[in-house]
Length: 123
Image 1 (tube, one colour):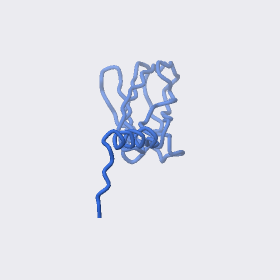
Image 2 (image 1 turned 30 degrees about the vertical axis):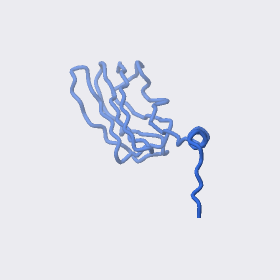
Image 3 (image 1 turned 120 degrees about the horizontal axis):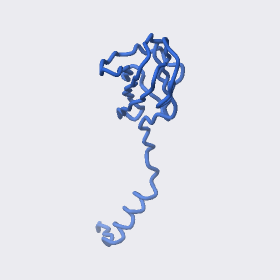
């Protein structure tokens, strides 16, 4: 039996067509779309609630929230059970007046970790 040989340019055209026409997997990196408190907000204390909403599913077991005060002291916030797959929330925290930053680390459904910061002021 004789082997079938395709011209190189035809093989290249087929390969490029497959690459271009094959649907790409959606990249579900976690992007923060809303937060409480919002970035640069001025909120009333002494108790604050933290909630972050993302554009994709978040693995709450492997995600973290931290509260950093103006001196740089960091405290790990205790996450509450997820109310929705794209939400991270923490138990209420008592704080004094001053500047704070929420540092977050979220593991998205695509396996990638993203991080960010949300600065705010407590009155």
